[in-house]
Length: 140
Image 1 (cartoon, rainbow, N blue to C red):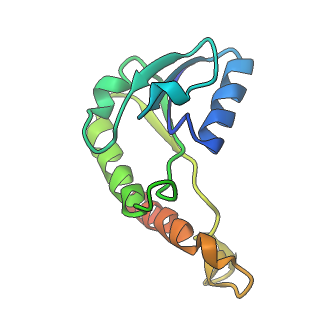
Image 2: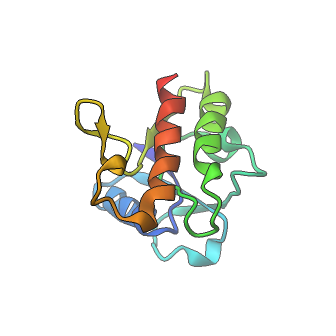
């Protein structure tokens, strides 16, 4: 399978890339900085979600796996915006989207989200909230 991994230079994205390679997939890593790519046997495409065309960068892929967050640059709004952008840009291309996000927006009991639980770490709330906003984009 031909995969494009968006956010492949991050912790989660790099692990996804490694796993995909061990399973024999062809992987195109979409990253802002090619110098941060540590894996061999991948195609590296420098890509910035705020400027570049995802349909062009992922052309030929079966699936785009998205492992992004706003923590590194403190811009959590990029998460939901990216979800909407990907849905629009990849519509009609046949490329599927697999979104990797946190579980903070998911329910731990009917009507109770993990992020609203008293033990949820405060330092991850902005990131979890952003992933929840992306989930709403996909739901609508």
